[in-house]
Length: 408
Image 1 (tube, rainbow, N blue to C red):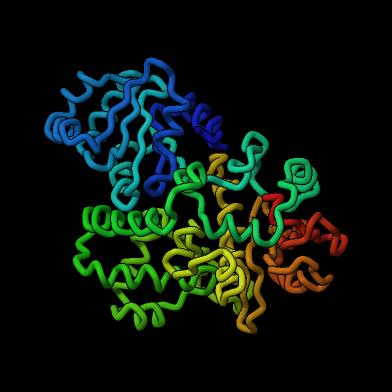
Image 2 (spheres, rainbow, N blue to C red):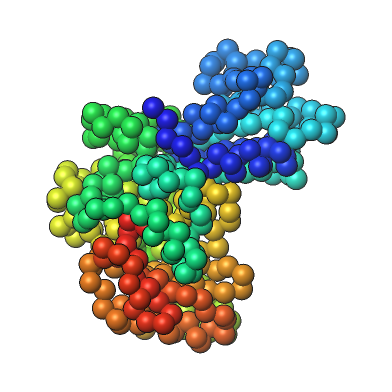
């Protein structure tokens, strides 16, 4: 079974405009399946998980491409960075677009090799797990979320009906990895246990010099417990029993590997009361729920992380709506030294669009009360949105609407 991905037309557009496209993202979120679905019949496929192909690619890139000429799809290209110089030579010689389609799960080292060898020749696309719109089969109509009446009107047509409280938390608890979504009989806990083990024992050791696997696992769990919250380096260092520098290094690994996202605060010299600490989000709520040991949908919904995990889910769905359409996500949040916060600000066309996430089915008129503090930033302020558990969208004021999670 295949679920249509929002990124399909983006891949075709990028391939028509660049000689190389690179799809990055965590393991097992469907990069290869997506590209194979989009590939023409004459495009060769090679995976560098194959040790014979990997050995040839590393030892003799020229011979590798004689045996596997473009157009070609190379899977897990990070295993043979020696290929990048040859790819550059072929691109400059052929002057054609769509020659190379690449995937990589270890963005940590990939980006350095790409920036050095393929600058100006490659379109880089970030893929995450299945989005809500993909799972509910309206990916073809999925557009980057912007709290405008035009976007809201389209979302209302696509909306998932009967997407109540426990259905939302079922999606959160299950997560977005295709294997779990497409094969409900999959043992969720076994899948995530294997995923974490593979990630720690294979990927992390290959891209870094981490030898303290137990310490890294404890750190991963401590990070998961803080999703949707301000990042506190000292707390993480204490809970994982590591030093401050190691916290920063390991967070960088998680961020560049597509496991977490650090949302930076909006900052301007005009207002010096804004904080500069980022917020941390896990990019798959199922993995996050597993690591924090919520063993059922009901316990997750009723537990201490309930609000933060809902905010995480909403944030990742909005992020997917941009990345899967090949768009840059200009996201920030607002928080000042009086602890007044706005969960998300989308910066588009020199306009700031404020978004708040609430775990309520009946948002009060004052739910977006902090939106007014954006006026001090001396920017154009767009329509706002409160994303919550209401059954349908309702206006809270002339400038703000409440919207169901089911519209994402």
